[in-house]
Length: 183
View (spheres, rainbow, N blue to C red):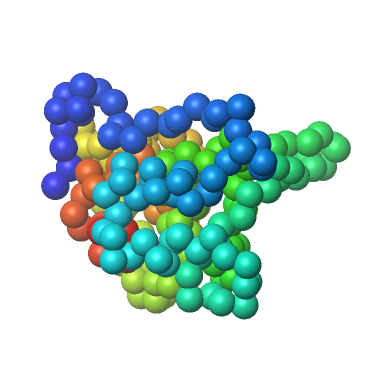
């Protein structure tokens, strides 16, 4: 069920957080920032090990590897530097994150990418069909997120990730099966 906007005073349940520019590679504790995500988003404790993969061995792909990287960026075709808060290579279950963006919402978004990669082709199609129906429901949180967050509209993979980032447990129940280990 989607909750009406006024039930949450017009806000998305998990609004975008501001970066903490006091954080750097030397003073950021990944384990503690990931724990804040677990608690805030109520991730079942039995699944923490999958996401809490702050480890050295990149060969172990049974869990996520999360690394701090203070220099994530890309160059635009015209040579401008664009900073990237975080990025995930789903197949490797590798996430890199800038220290100032070690925030619950960023983790929520990035942790969805390997979960999407674990869906079957049929499950991806099912999700997309349900998502596209549910995002049209007036006064639903999903429609509000869709309307407010243009990045959701870039690809279905990003829509999947941002649905969890901004709605968490308040997303429509019909979509929760496509977020294994987060509910």
